[in-house]
Amino acid sequence: MTLDESKTDDDVLDNGYDVSIITDTKLATYLEGATIDFIESQNGGGFEIRTAKTAGDSGCDSCGGSCS
Image 1 (tube, one colour):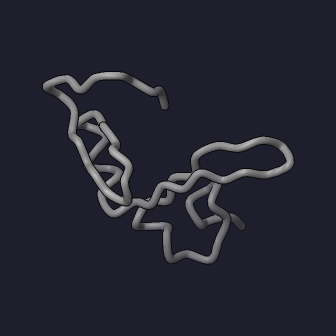
Image 2: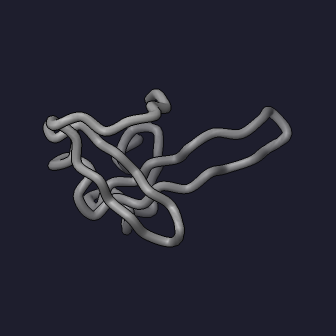
């Protein structure tokens, strides 16, 4: 994930909750219905992206809810 300053012809722009997100067209199909949160902890902070497929799962986020 990188932060860019401008949008290209191959990008999709999504606006919501006072935030604009620019995503590559190929990646946008995978992120449809996903939620993006900024999580802070004692170890620092970062973005957590949960796809619609795993958003309702009660399993481990790091393996898409299918940890055993």
